[in-house]
Image (cartoon, rainbow, N blue to C red):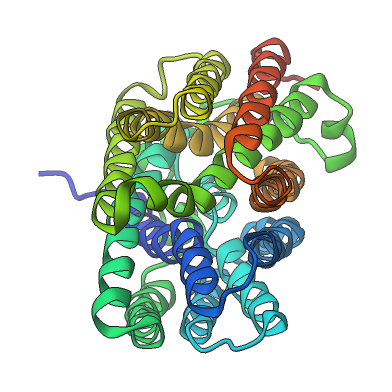
Length: 404
């Protein structure tokens, strides 16, 4: 019986990291937004600005994160990420002034960057060639699990034990799980263990052609990379803005219990969508799939804006969940296919930095428009419109493997 390829252990650690990063970071941000607005009485737009700091901080760190993982491996980055995430989550329940919320979200942004899709995809790039799409998709399942479990658990804990106690317990749990895994399981590349990508034999690897090398400047000159950064930047801005404001959007009409269940259902749909992607990721057109997901997301947002009844809000959220996981996962798959493993860390580092900077505008985009127009109708409709633009940019921007 053949021994399990060590690369799948790396996938497992990345999956667990994604669970905590998304439960306490991406999806947790929406809970913190709601809790701070409700308990402190701060305007939604003000707190949304702090969450934007979270995403902008992460964006600015993605280039060095990719580079460090490429040179030194994932161990130091994942260790820093687990520590920063835990510190930020522990502190968010104790803030008493808006400036403190901004500082805490900055710390959480460091953790998010170190445990992000960029970190995961760069970590896995040397370990897989044939099954690269499957490996990234499986690791990304943790994001859906985190979204599925994180929001209900945090809301339940806040209701029963209070905001400070809940965030303290969550922070301890993330630290004691993530840091040991980073220190004792993570490895840089299969060759360090005498292995080869996908667990292949040395003779087979020797016949595989070398991937073309790209630097950041040359890559950014291509329509392929520009379309990824622009299209996914818009798509992720719309997606993350919705996820951040979902609890606040749903709570007035659905109440706490139904809101929690709807957010969980959104994450379950995202999980099912990711499972399908994991099964077929290496056989499908990643660009076409991403474009279809963005069109579906636009339809979801439009229906929630135009017919904001309880049933439509629930259905729209679940439909949005179908797109959440795949839009997040497909951008690194496209870049890995079109620019190769050897250049992935540098090329996707700059692409993900631009994407994340655009993503960081999402919470403020929804929050400021909500305050200006006294509701979510206008921001949802505008988000739907720009998502359609993003879909067109992605599907028309490339598709063939890039060669220098």
